[in-house]
Length: 110
Length: 112
Image 1 (tube, rainbow over the protein chains, first blue to last red):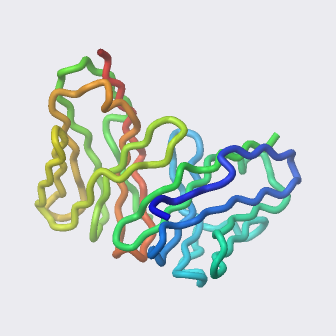
Image 2: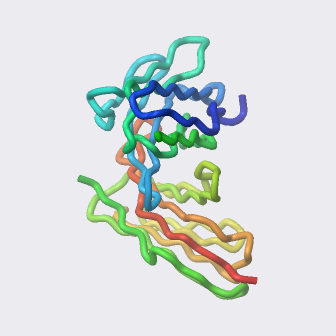
């Protein structure tokens, strides 16, 4: 596709439930990034992939967060046992030379 | 830790005024991007600057990369209500492979 497609746009989960977010990168882009945007517009890097391989996971919380980019499937970000502080907008970006962002998934944990 | 500080944090101006947003760091970046984000949307790429001292123009927007590649500025001439949004600078230590370090953001409101 010509744009980064993220689903769902909104997701509400009770504390302790699982949340799974999806991202279809732009065709031909071999790098995928996940960012978390919290209050005060702060963007936090989570993880990046080169094709299906993890490239940089220095921003990923060690517990509860996992991500995958499998061939012929959308990339995914999964949060096990969500906590209130996981409430944020999660953005996916794909890159060839410059990063292009999706519209984000707003996760609300109640 | 690489940090990008933007100033001002908030800016409310009248249509037709000029403004400048600054993006400063103590770290050197190989490239710097400027994005604009509107409510409920993802950041939209405006420009990428890669060479120290580089100046790029996009209609009424002028972007400059500092000589030492540590800072950048965005100047808007004759602002319009359609320029309203959150402006973000983001630096990359490497090329497409590297994560972006985002600035703290500048929220611009242009009143008609």
